[in-house]
Length: 451
Image (cartoon, rainbow, N blue to C red; front, side, top):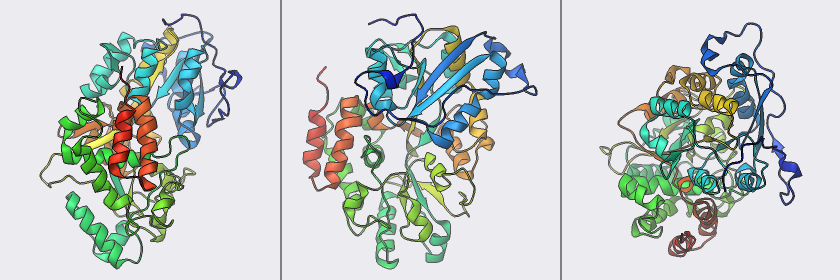
C-alpha cells in the first residue's frame, strides 16, 4: 500500500476497535518562544503559514514537557504549530492507527523492529535528503542502519540511552568497602558479598511495564549475550542468522538466572523472586535510597526516576546519593560493549513542514537544546557533553561518541515484533515464574516469523 498524499487526521480515540487508548503527557497547541527568541539558528528551515504538525510517541509527563520545550523556539521562528500527544499504548496501537489513516504526522518510534513493520505496511515516508544529510553528519553509521529498510532510510535517530548501567549508592559502597567490579566474575563476587554481609538481597528488580512487562529482563539477557558471545554473534542473533535458542543464548539466560532466579539475590526491598513481575520498573531502584538493596540494572534514562517530579533532592554523581557503573565485560581488557536504545521520528505524511520538523530533530542544534533541558542524552556527534544534566549523562554521551565503544542497539527492539516485543517479553515472565531456560528459548525461537 502506498502513502497517500492528503493530510491525515489523527484521532485515535475515535478509531473503532482501539479500546483503552489513554493519552497522557503534554497535549494541545504549542505556543512557544517569544519576542526575545533569536531566530538566526532557524532560518534555514524556512517559514510557514497555517502549518500544523502532529507528533505522537511514548514520551510522557515531565519528559513530554521537556520535549515540547525543545522545539519551542523552532516552532516560534518557523511558524509551524506542533501538537504532541503521548500515550503508553503508542507502540501497541500505532500500526492500527496507520492502517486506518489516523496516525500522527510524525511518530516517535522506539523500536527498529516496529519501524520495519510500519515500512512494510507502506505507511511511512522515506526520509528527505536534509534529514539524511543530518544523519550522515551527526551519527555513527550503525545508527543509520537501524532505520534503513531494503536500502531506504526512513528516519534519523533522536534521543539515545545506554542500557547496561548498574545503579548503586556511593556512600553505601564506601561504608562497606565494596569496589566497583571490573569483570562479570567480580560482579558475582560482589553480589555474593552483599548477600552474606549486608542483611539484604543485593539486587532490586522490576519487570512490570503494562503491556510491555518483561522488557527489563530482556535487557539483562542482551547485555550478557553481547559480553559473553561477542558483537558478531549478537548481530547474527538479532537478525536470526543463528537460532534464538543457540547454546550461547542458553548460557546467557543461565548466567542471568544466577541473579534473577535466586531468592538470595532478589528482590531487595520488595520480597522474593516472584515480586519482580509485579514491581513497576519505574520504582524498582528506589530501595537503594533506603539501604534495602544495593544494585539495580537499568538504563541511563533511569536518572529521571530518582527525582520523578523534576526536582534535585536526589543527586546523581560519583559522590552523590546514587551513581552507576557499566556492566563489566568478561575480561577487564575486553572492549567496552554497550547495549542501548533510542527513538526514530518516522513520518506518516509527506509535507514540507513535516520534513522541516524532522530535519530539526535530526540536528545537533536540537540535540544540544534538548539535552540542556535535562534527563536525556543523544548519540549525535555534534552534542556537547557539557550540556548534560549530570556527570552520569555526560559520561554516557562520551561513551556513545567514543570510537572505542562497541555499541549495539537493544536486541528485542531489533527483532520482529512477534519475537522481541511479544514472545521474548512474555518468555522472561514465564522464566522468572519457574519455566526452564530451554523451554523459554525454544518457545521464543518458535515465534520467529517464517517469512
